[in-house]
Image (cartoon, rainbow, N blue to C red; front, side):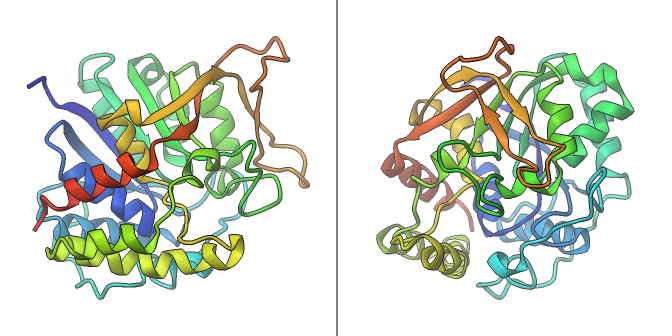
Length: 314
């Protein structure tokens, strides 16, 4: 077996973040160097606590969890309790974590790790706003060419927006950070709503998690049953989109996804379209290609992978 791929997960758990984190911790192909919590779905004091809860649920309390940015770079924090509940992880009754939050700031951890690890060996997996990554790039520009790639959930094009008519939540929370990251020159793989809205948590798929019988499988089913209710009502679908696990699934089985390399630019001046990801899907502009934007997913294969991995956990 090849050496495990070194990753840092930056996240704002979030039920869909939770499934991504559990999948990563269950996968020997991935070496999770640390998890950095950012404020987005809920405030930072909850996202860092939720990240620790999930490490303990997965039986991985040795995982290092750091607190990152408490707010976006420029704008006021926007949260999404109406989707995720007041804790951010409503659904299961998870115990308070006993593992320690690391003392180091998450942005400093990102910088220090990228400077210490061999160049081109660390992948950043972003499941929330891009605040921590952008702050790290500003704080120490030498990390930029050292990043292997950024695999991120965020943005939308054909599916428009989910928090405003034109913007997806993760980008909208901190569009200025996203602008820095997309202009950085780091290779980016982007999982937009165009993909995640094809990965629906149907009753059959949730039952498969519950039928695993382990505590992680049951908790996943309970999280998804809570999480999907908002989007089922909004979109009229059987099940809600499962966004963030697309990032981890791509690292494990990239063949589940199809997309194309294009230019993505971030709107940061218009209040009407703030945070829009302007995807040049048809190559209309001369702007340089800076991201592989995914558009297709093998949804059955995706859920089979997640179920199999979470089945390995306690």
